[in-house]
Image 1 (cartoon, helix red, strand yellow):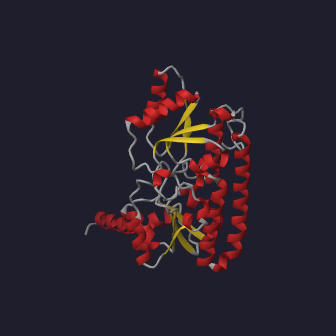
Image 2 (cartoon, rainbow, N blue to C red):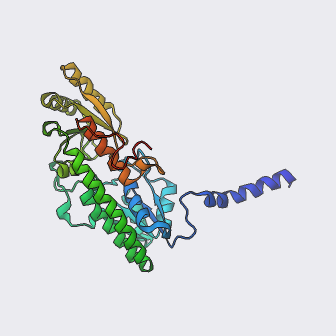
Image 3 (tube, rainbow, N blue to C red):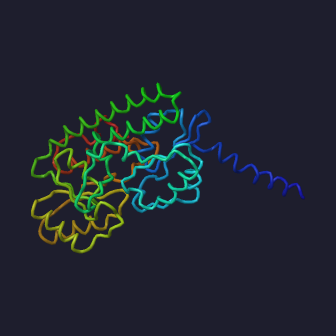
Amino acid sequence: MTAVAAIAALALALLPACAERADPESSPDASIRVVATTGMIADAARAIAGDRAEVRALMGPGTDPHLYTPTRTDMQRVLNADIVLYNGLLLEGKMGDALDRARTAERRVVAVAEKIDPEHHLHPEELEGEPDPHLWMDPVVWRLVVEAVRDVLIEADPDGADLYLANASAYLAEIDALHEYASRVLALVPEEKRVLVTAHDAFGYFGERYGYRVMGVQGISTASEAGVRDVERLVAEVVDRGVPAVFAETSVPDRNIRAIIEGARARGHAVALGGELFSDAMGERGTYRGTYIGMIDHNVTTIARALGADIPASGMAGRLDD
């Protein structure tokens, strides 16, 4: 073997180890490995566990969990985890096989949204008895899911209980402050304008908590396609109610929302694109909007301002300008 070939072979042999050390999500001091399906669940796990756990989110910004199919790398991460946290309530519709394999491998697999009392679940007619899975849209309900994440971590790692309890308490206090902010600014929107039109029906819990009529072009699952009649129905609602703005979503194509805007304009009503909301995924990792608090702060502030509330664009803690 030539010297050049020997060096190349050595470099190739070292690649996996270098890649592992360079992984920004790896934590050499972690006691347990946690994989979460959505960013919202991963954010809770990271906040509660701190450096004691290595937490990975399978679904990144802009990912639609209704349509998400795990890659081979994702599958390996699931099988290597000590704990697999998923939402449940049929949100991750294409992950059944992956979760079953993790159970067969004797991993701790928990549907955190199914751990809370079912009385907190919404049951829209569209789902024929099944609950709406988008619990994170209501901070009051989501705090119960966060408590479930905390309890799973304590059960799996009792030695970290004191840390998990303290961190969870601080995180829940942030969620309480978020809810107080949302209640205050959303109430500033004139009552007749409290109509939220979005790309799909992800905001039912939001509407129930804050007193908004919510209408989505697509159903609760984006796996169901919207048709011309769905768009026409919402155009009629927007025009009849004088809705000032409609909203796109980061994880759903905006073509249907833009069709509503054009349809309303054709009927003599100017409706604005109020902004882009985070529905099934958060913002970029490492940013404020890439946290649960920042995600909901962005949504609440964007909705309130577009529908008529005179509030700063910087949001609850002045961080939306970051």
